[in-house]
Image 1 (cartoon, rainbow, N blue to C red):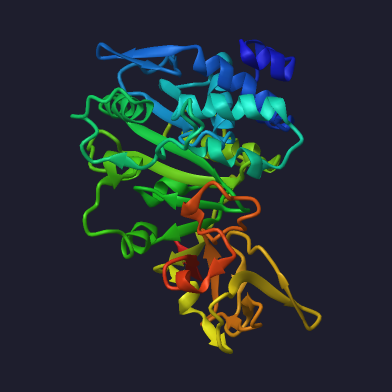
Image 2 (cartoon, one colour; image 1 turned 90 degrees about the vertical axis):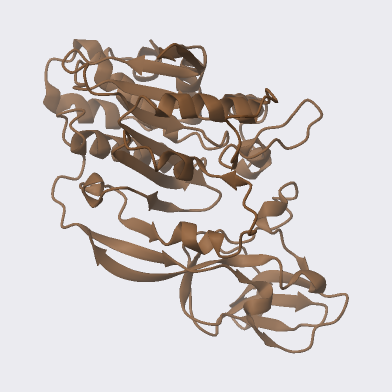
Length: 402
């Protein structure tokens, strides 16, 4: 079993439930450890109602086999390995005999996930941005494949046999036979938050205290009227058998803290759902969260402009530092104040200021690092693009009690 190689400890020999957390969370799971979990899940498959679903494991409980299984979903984007720590937690609980309900661990995009770990193995010390293409994966010609979380609305009737469509069909077939799902993501920046949930009670004891609201509405405000794709969330939400459906961002893709956050949130979810009696890391909860109310995106053209743009200008994200305006990449959920200089055009020197106070998410990213993905709105931005390229999705921050 993979956990013995990671922990040098056999969880099946655990005799005291109270030491489980100490044993599991004492170790910081590295990318090498997460690859072991990935490889184990990838080589397995499960069968639900006569349907074979690859790259998945089924962990049976000896107590309750009547309730439909709960799913931990990792790597719906291949370059987001933190979710594998949630599967590792489920494996450890299973080995220790501490699962009260069946659990499925599944890799969302097996092709992209495999390509990601292969690329990491070749250059493990290179920045995470060099592996950004494996968010979706590449075909044999080196071209970006479709995003695993942008699913064609007619995916169930398509017969193109592409990895993208086939996996969407497999996830949909699995979803008919489960009671809940935890979808674990990570981000290009330092984004640690709850992106969606069905019931407030699902978030009790959460180690993540920031929650996004109005995210789907903000994104759809600038979507085409002819919507041709859906996310996994929007596909599964109408299913009445899924009573718990939660999505999280566990932090930066390759931050050593992200697997810890993913596993800690998984444990809180399992405890809330009655899947285990192992108590979460946070046991006293006042139910107070930071609410990030997501607003429709703002473009570079929505910023307050001082100066006249020239036709050959290129616009860079920027900040003022000791009176000097320098190129600067804003990070996820970073606070920006009204009137702050946040972009500059060169060579004209025209500056752009924030139109109000906000904390941003999904900032456009430097083209130096993200030159292969037009969806990030890479900067610098030409004058012709200022009204079409997003600067970010601004969020209004307040306290909320759930």
